[in-house]
Length: 99
Image (tube, rainbow, N blue to C red):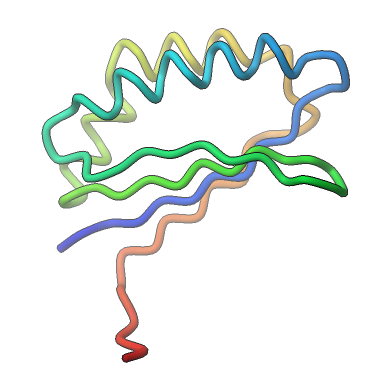
């Protein structure tokens, strides 16, 4: 069963370039993972200007593999001091048919 993951991340003012560099690196690697259907990073245009990670995996095993990967661990380490708060991670393992 596919698993959607959305993560909302707020960074300290002035840390955007460093964060975006780390995000680009992890996204490039994540997109190559078996079981990853897509991995996109967005940024709010106003307000807190949070970064929104939009991820879709084939199943929970693919999510677990991503979280355990060397590139994800390197990303987490690289951004640790750039955040204003811990990331808000919303796993959504159940699709809703709205058709």
